[in-house]
Every structure is written in C-alpha cells, then in structure tokens.
Length: 102
Image 1 (tube, rainbow, N blue to C red):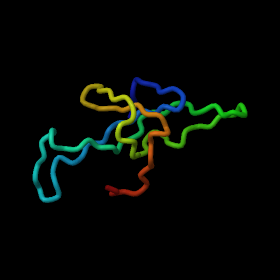
Image 2 (image 1 turned 45 degrees about the vertical axis):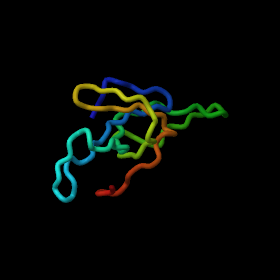
Image 3 (image 1 turned 90 degrees about the vertical axis):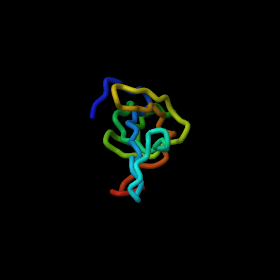
C-alpha cells in the first residue's frame, strides 16, 4: 500500500483498521454503534531520530506492521474511503505479531 504522503522525522502514517460490522452472534452493527479501532496498519514511516551524539536512529516500525496506537493521538485525515492517522512513534504502544489477535 502506498500513500502520497511522506512523513518526516519520527512521524508514522497509519491506515485505521475497521472493527467488524457484525458481532460474533451475527448481529450487524451500524456505523454509529461501532467503536473506533485503535489498531492500524503502518503505511509509511519517517526517517527517524537524530541522536545527541550526532548519530541517527531509525524507527522501530516498518510499512506493513499492524500496531496498536494511543487512543487520542495523532491527526486524522481521509483520502477517498480510507481513514489515516499521522502519529509520532511514541504514540504506538505495540506491534501485533500473532495472527488472530483481538
């Protein structure tokens, strides 16, 4: 997946992953009653941090990673039907490493 946006520094662009439209018992939920997801796919990452000693530290996450990010963080924007959030690396709490985690 690509985006026309290129984050700078420690910023990361996330594509918000939608919560299921249906409960496990089969009830279909309207958009208004679904909770906003705080899980997302990393779409693009900035170059990283300059360190105090003059070095450079790249970011921990990479495009394609599925992550959990802070609830009230970032700047939300829409492009077509997709919703993206731009966050700083410090606003990402975890990388989801196993399939089927919820």
